[in-house]
Amino acid sequence: MTKKRYTVTSALPYANGPLHIGHIAGAYLPADIYVRYRRSKQQDVVFICGSDEHGAAITLRAKKEGMEPQEIVDKYHNLNKKSFADFGIDFDVYHRTSDPLHHKTSQDFFSELNSKGAFTQKTSEQFYDEEHSQFLADRYIMGTCPKCGYDSAYGDQCEKCGSALSPSELLNPKSTLSGNEPIKKETKHWYLPMQDHADWLKNWIENGELDGEKQHDPSQWRSQVIGQCKSWIDGGLRERAMTRDLDWGVKVPIEGEDGKVLYVWLDAPIGYISATKQWAKDNGKEWIDYWQNDAELIHFIGKDNIVFHAIIFPILLKVHGGFVLPKNVPANEFLNLEGQKLSTSRNWAIWLHEYLKDFEGQQDVLRYALCSTAPESKDTDFTWSDFQTRNNSELVGIFGNFINRVVVLTNKYWEGKVPERHELDSYDQSVLDEMDAFPEKIGGLIEQYKLREALTELMNLVRLGNKYLADTEPWKLKKTDEKRTETILNIALQIANHLMVLSEPFLPFTSHKLQEMLNVQKSCWDKIKSIDAAHHVGKASLLFSKIEDELIEQQMAKLGK
RNA sequence: GGCGAGGUAGCUCAGUUGGUUAGAGCGUCGGAUUCAUAACCCGGAGGCCGAGAGUUCAAAUCUCUCCCUCGCUACCA
Image (cartoon, rainbow, N blue to C red; front, side, top):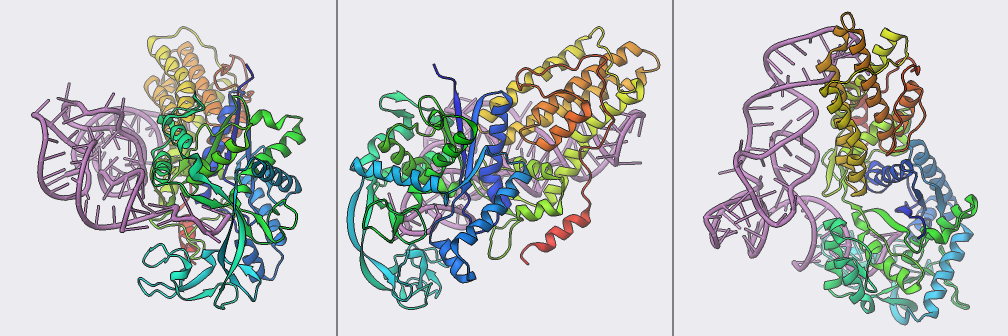
């Protein structure tokens, strides 16, 4: 039996813009919490991410800004990589798809599939922009919607009436590159006949079985994931082109096929694999150990990415052979902002790099607010007012306050020396029992991807601490019963120490501060060491500070500008 | 249009397989307290569970119709 390994991925962000809180709440923060928890249990986990740097959108943007595609992706790769690091999203590797290692990995993957006869080749007519000598995706053709008359409908969809369109239906079709009317031109592509895989996919999705073996428990998969996959499978899978006519991407590794690149789904997800290779190389590991046998592959994504991670990528992995399929794809729904959808073009967003500047040192406040209202089962709403309230009444009022009162009392009564624990009464014992149950309770919820509820339980441990102090009133007993006071504070300090360990996945910066304040070592999640009597804790300092109305008003004023 | 996921307290959200008075946090109101960042602790009020119909002894939960939000709709990534 090999040691259990966990391979956790977050969707590769597209490197044509900065990150906002919607991205964070959906795919990065939940994964980071999950991974930090596994690490805290000293399990073998690798956390994979990187920039997705290919595709037409990047070439278009480059053209518009008079830059090279590589300059665009360099800019956002570096910005996003730094934002993640500063925010405490602690990837083991943040790779990029423009790296040669990735190109080779993707090409080898394609060649292997091709040699196994996984693709069919087909020639078809596609729209083409003569001035730019480029084939056009439906998305890059605009025209008048035949249904509602809206004059800026896309070739695949009208934004106004929501109808699904095909570019040939558009009236007055125009290329978004040149503005000219596109012509039709023949081109050859490699197609993946997904319908050939419908049977095993259905059994895998619905029953968690593959090749007669139980792979996962479908009841642990979210309803939106299973629902959407079934919808696709039951509606009849079709073939899908796996190559594109473009010069910015991973070249199709076949001689004489210039100007063709691999489609994003033979490119970006394989980025998870190439990133693992890079990490393994840098850390003296075997990358394949994290992709086969009983390795657990877990993809954290947003709901827009479900079929790609739960249908297309699994097909590719299975046909290639030698890989595990995902154990779970905990897709999140979307986060709204002040009741409206996030929008880059309207600047209706909170940009991570701006938050980090405006709220320096307060990463954990946003982590807390986003996890508290994470869109785990439905779209949720982030408001600045909620953010402020969660900080001021929950983090400052409940969490920070508990730690402060414990550390202040210890310093005031015993100059920071941890008092001894004497005889326990039944209430002490029940509080300790409750405390001891939290690692398993919170951990179990994290393993079920119920991070919001897990965070609620963390706060319940803080509440237990506050209530214990309120009920026992050590500040009154100090004059009459020194021993009793010592026992109470000893127990309160154990709770604080538990909080140091259990808060780490959610609030890593706070956990670190708390560790320094208590002057203790990190403990393993399920073997938390108690703080010994006579140990010295440091002076009290505030874990969180109040956020005033003015700051919130400033942030509100930035929206939509 | 088709399909998927949602619509539950003022706000943000939980509610397994139908089963006593529908839950939590925040907010609000009242009380208690002072070790603590006027914080903590205790208690109360507050809900026709999107609308309507049906099945059932019993529906937030199952069925049907309708309304609203979001996603997917196969060449956006």
